Image (cartoon, rainbow, N blue to C red; front, side, top):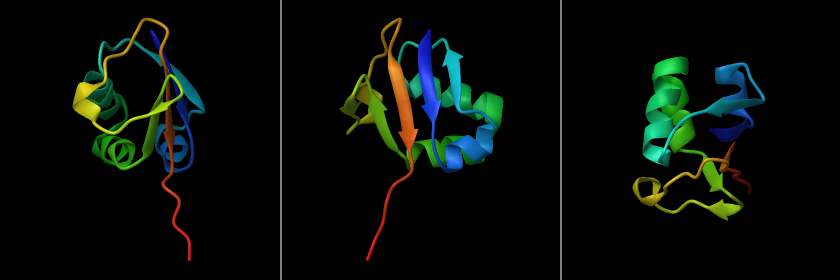
Length: 80
């Protein structure tokens, strides 16, 4: 099971700080998030800064998850 950490809007949408979900890829994880928390949660997750095992994700489709992967969904920061 992957350990998921939610920050910002993802925390608000899921009502959780973290989660344990069974997924073999990041694409599959996003489908599970949509099923459990709705389309707004999936949309927000996809637009988040996603970190898997301390590495920033550049291409969602290419990321495989290991049994004990840690996934973080961080809000994108904008400033001026």
